[in-house]
Image 1 (cartoon, rainbow, N blue to C red):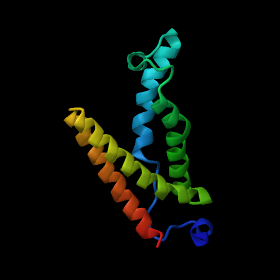
Image 2 (image 1 turned 120 degrees about the horizontal axis):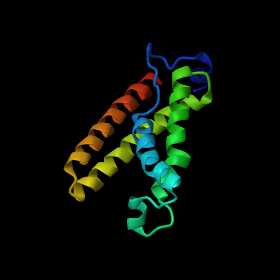
Image 3 (image 1 turned 180 degrees about the horizontal axis):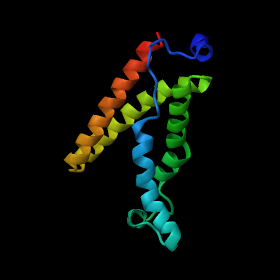
Length: 136
């Protein structure tokens, strides 16, 4: 592990990540709900339907998950810091999260979104396998 952090390479030529697709997909989705509500001073319709004061998914995603994916992707891209080691962990986390969301939305009857999330889970798994194999 120390060698990975100091050598600037994970052992596979051309193996670099520019962030997890989750960051690129969810940030605009959440901002599309939150920014208009903040500008108009209203509550987003999705939140009003729940009866909660805030959406815990927004809090977790915007405060922890998405920033960690961005930091991990940049760190993997640059391979200059120990933060690059969180990249593989986030890829595995992303695969597990996308898979669980796929099962949830399939159960709820949204087969189209279940297919999209399943593909995202498979892509995350493929990236995780590639990165973890390179770390050997």
